[in-house]
Image 1 (tube, one colour):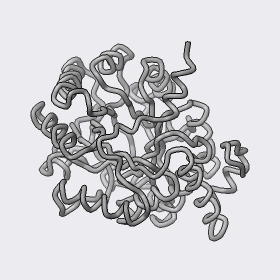
Image 2: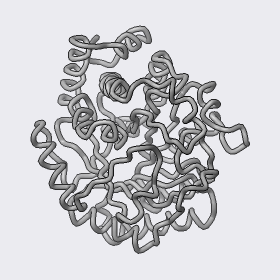
Image 3: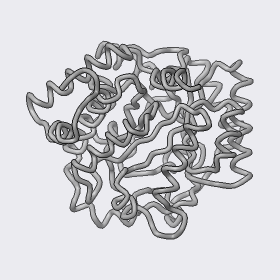
Image 4: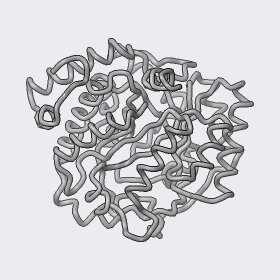
Length: 357
């Protein structure tokens, strides 16, 4: 393995199967590459779970539109802005506004208004990541021009056959349209991110190797990926007997993060909440092997139970200020520090866009 991200498909597959000393060497190499390229700053994205209303019916997701057990909500404008004010006051460089997939003029206007006011109340100092699903290129452009800088649209799997196994054939779910949306985001000018679920039923390590090469080929600027965790009120639950034990899914996710850092040394990689759902130290483990972004949940507490994507979602007993202090201590203990008041823009994005005509 070299330092320049040139790994063959066969090497990636082999490393995804690594255990023991070989796994430790993989993690050490990824950590060294991370230190060289992005250092030991960890950037915060205050996670705002804006709405759990969704038009999609993905077989793995707890807020799929046909799940009648979900109590649906949407934050008010003022609630969203208050979250953004809190993040800015506490030194979060960025927020991430996440929602179910809704494509409507009303929703577009709501997000647009929040993005615009966020710029006003923070004097343009807060970075804004959106994760609001597939939209038209016109909508993407509108939000971008209003001040959103990053967009995360997870492909979930780059294997088109597996993608079809995870989504109904109802005209609303299209692998091709997902790819086109990612391309539209890059064209618009966003720092563009994607990600996959790791340890799905029917998924092979070869699929995961392809996922890593897909992200490299797409020249993404950031990634949010984590272990698949099942939800009992979804169609995919019936396949849970096929799943790896949770601990093995966590290790596999850590190897994926390490390999992506080696393949793409200068991108932003999030240590996702799903890691913490398996192991309370899972996010810190991810930071040690290549991740450099954390997304503390700053959604008003009364809504957090309702944004229920999978089982065992972590819900802290600490308030948001205490949680931030706790994270700070945890990161210092592993030789990292929070990049307070820093947007933490993707270095890959800066290089990618500086080479454009």
